[in-house]
Length: 86
Image (cartoon, rainbow, N blue to C red; front, side, top):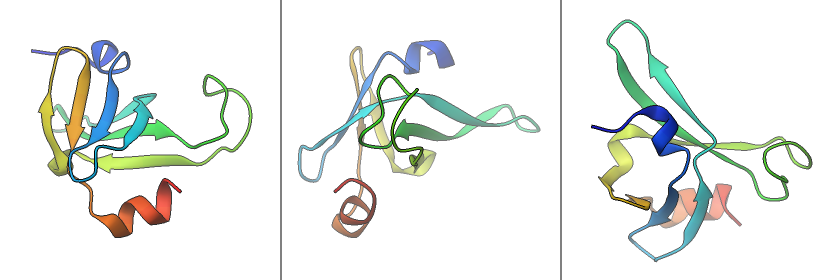
């Protein structure tokens, strides 16, 4: 079982194209059900989440395919990648 603080130390990689999307900066939690709804990744141009663009990219939990020791594998389609990560 992973704690949410452990998720913040993992890099997110898209399995459909191998693109590195960044590191988890936060999680969205459904407090009523006690489940994680989504992972939040800071937008490009941010420095340690403090400076730069304040865009954040939300990756829904259903897009997460595997949580490993060092990385989280997600499956995002090209449209989502083009819209948020380019």
